[in-house]
Length: 585
Image (cartoon, rainbow, N blue to C red):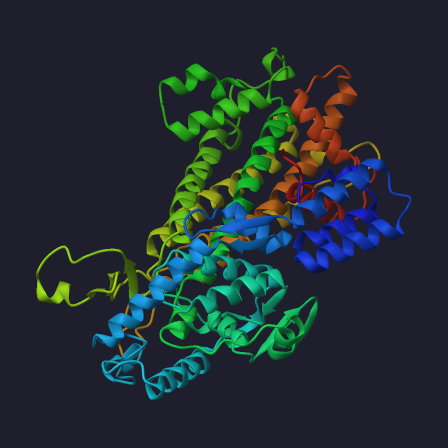
């Protein structure tokens, strides 16, 4: 939610923050009621509220091929509705038809004619004689029990935001056309999202080779069992379905396996993290240049010709951003107190920020592939013929009555490529956290700033002395969260599943690092603003860049100058919220 914090009254800010994480029905009701009952809102406040309402009413057309991480955020956090064209539904139907044709042709199909996991050696449904009523009933019973057996997670519950992100992520991958589910499954994902039905889903219990025991709870709700959140209330799933006129799913064929065997939880967390990292990186750049002004630091490490001789693309790009943000700053003029060279946390800023920007680009590329492809096993491949005459390969292909394709066992459920990218990004982010902590220490030290110790005034005793413990502990926590955990595993499922990635754990840790980093930056912002004020008291004509001056002025509407010692926890929280919600567009 991009709104200027300082331009809103506290009550308006509270309601807008509430709606930013609510889904469409509750968000719209909250906002509409507030606007109706608060005539004292200014025109500016009303316009921003209406803009948020419009944002939460956005509609996103899903195709299985072009979902973005920003789209996931719109659906998960702002209640955007989703639509699916008849053409895309036809693709899902064709995938289902190929699945059934393969079953009728006598193919052994994991999760349909045979069991799953270690039970793959057990035949449950023989469809080679056709889809008789007996075969259909056996398949339905198998599917229902598969959902029961895999609804087995541990708490705490996921947030509604995360579950909505899971549903739009999995729905889009179903629309890609490789799952073989009945179109009814896709319809229910859509209808759950658009009717504010959010299955209660535990958050722990996935080893990161498909989030099997967790996202199954969405399927449980689809068959009318378990609990859901419906328009703000926790109710039995069947009650919510009845309230909006939805018939429960009768799972058949490969429906249950397709619902449960996917990395949709990990991928959804990843999509949210990527968009959070985009905001964090841009705010960090803005704060970094203001911090450089607070130090009276050197601009030379960011000059164009400095980087011509070492052309790392993302480092150079960040250096250019820093120069742009510092346009017209006093730092372009000589200063008698300016050190010849600054501490490394300032001097290498383009490298630490550039490392995160490079990691963000890699993550966005990897997760974009995940969102718009199939991680199913087995997977339907539409409109293909066998590329060889090798019997083992040919055996997976069908071609009858205009239906051409294959049903192939895969290892596509491994998210390792982008899990490793998240671990790399975590290391880069830990360097960024350490650099912020080090800069903050320097800003409180008169040997570097030629300002007062701990940035105090004649009316303070302690100023920003004790607060260093807070950001030091958070930076240390980020170092530990950056340690790789993707290789921690136990061989399970009858010794068949002997590799894993711990994808949800990896991405949850990354989310925590982002949150910690905002607090670290928030405390740096407190020091930066204090140093700027003290400099301007000594030099009233001190000229910040236009961009940093606006940023600084906005901040001072939230956290005032520290003239006398006061409780600092509210300032830390205010700084954290200011940076998280700062509008960059």
